Image (cartoon, rainbow, N blue to C red; front, top):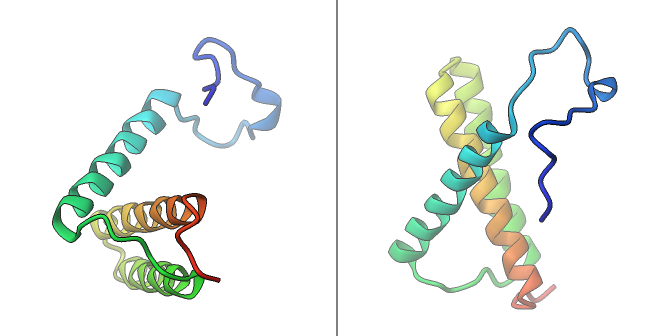
Length: 103
């Protein structure tokens, strides 16, 4: 994967009214997602999800939990649920790419 150059920014695509995020902040979050996936695999094992319905169910449950955290306006919970969604999505994609999912 080729990350954008840290020195070059195409600011024409970003609204001047928005704050900017540095790529290192994204890299840090991606490392956290990876660490959480490894941790979950150590706890739950390396079994794949069996179907796209199972993937959807897990992601939908995490989105529901995100909605609840947003309703409570709890930023720590919101971040945690976003992390759970990212983990579920990455693991689901991995199961599909490994051709371990029955449609």
